[in-house]
Length: 367
Image (cartoon, rainbow, N blue to C red; front, top):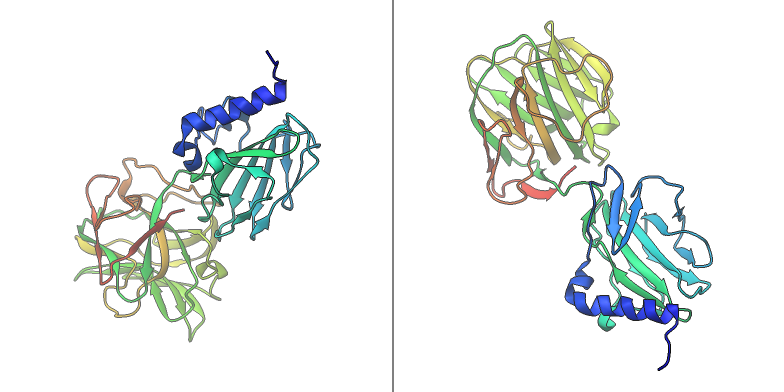
């Protein structure tokens, strides 16, 4: 009986595994040990630590789409900022590597694979998930003349998959009826948002009743080149308009009231402060993404993770959290993680919101 070489046995085992997995292989097979922030991921029977963070344990960070199989390393990784045409060089029989691609924040970048690739069951080459920040992993075995490749982690995300709401600036919003005042002399309103809107209006939200009014930050007052917080107790201006208000990237915004002064924080840094109050009298209808009194002044962009607290959570510069916690000082927190439907839950369990407008805000990928 003819004895198989080590490479032939590995090749046979890989194809046998692919045959057993069938279509599941083409959809991606990924098991995770622990959690990715702790940096441990298992692909097949290989566990890679410090994934996808920095590591000197066989990690090669690529600056272009060239993989040299004679170079020592287990994990090759690249962040795609454009479409990539892969070039594989130097066959080394028995070499097994993992190739990790991460879409940048724009996404939409595809892979063009070399012709000398063998895919499971003769499957066609695949580009994987091209959504912004999507992570794709491929396992590649060099048999000396060809490369055997299978998808290991398609559609897996570097962060937990979350959703957000995109507003059209023409009157759609999330409505919360009869939101309670929680009368205090301190308050924090914070959220994540991204927008490219630079015209008049662009209110992130309003909170108003017959007693008083508080409007979230206005993206731009074109005539005065100002960005401001308007409240029943005063207006706090930021001038010139900060680039973070319209650069199309995610930013954290926080309004903190303490001692009758409201401080505006952007990405954890204080930008300005002024005499004002975020407090309300009695209950009020809260609208996230629109301005209660003005047609066409709604927010044109995406909003995520809106939290209102009855304390001043920040007094100095701070690193913004991607998501927040609920504690005894949280009076409203809308994560927008439902991903579909016409309602969104308040994480405190009290003040759920309803998507309003025609069309209503659209569900999109979150922060």
